[in-house]
Length: 315
Image (cartoon, rainbow, N blue to C red):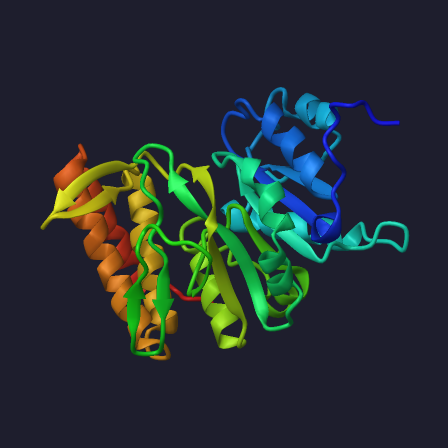
């Protein structure tokens, strides 16, 4: 019999859910997050995406009773996702069937909301629908305290939702961290794009879902803490905005991937093409108004955009 203070075993949709947590850099204080995930879903797969195995991560995984893979940062974050998904497919058996949902978790996200999120009847109803790709809670940035602004996207129309909202909203994209994806939908969409590596991996999967007639949802009543870069708040024309704080190398990748997606999708999705141009402008304005190393970062963003313009687009 379980001890009185043991966490409840997963039930309902949670019992058919696996979590994939990708670790890059120092493992840090992951013990609590691993225990939380192990208590909330049926399986947890940790992908160590460092070139050399992370010191202490095997011990943490063993204590939490979760599975550990070493991937070595081949294909970036996208490669780690693909490795975990292959592992879950190959390890399936009649005694341990493949999960019906995958929750992707970033090491900089707080998974405490996951139990309530997966137990929500509205979330369960969406995950049971064949026309749904993913459902996610909203995220609030740890550094700035601001919630993300999600986007409604039509072929010609682009609209940013308010930062604060309750209930379900259909959106164009979600950040992969803490999002629950139906396994059948992931199979239809194919592997995550390892050419992109990190930035816009989730954006492109949202676009693929849209092309396949699958919807993506955010539930604004469930919110988790998350970190993207080293964000800084600033104001422009009376509006509260946030700069990502990424260094030059990451700014180069953002510029390249934004233009790559503009080339791939812009003719089919004119509103998305406008969004790509807005993203580049937003990055540039944030650098100028709120960050240091301005010239280096602006140069890297411009160089990356040029690389995306002339580089090969695989899809």
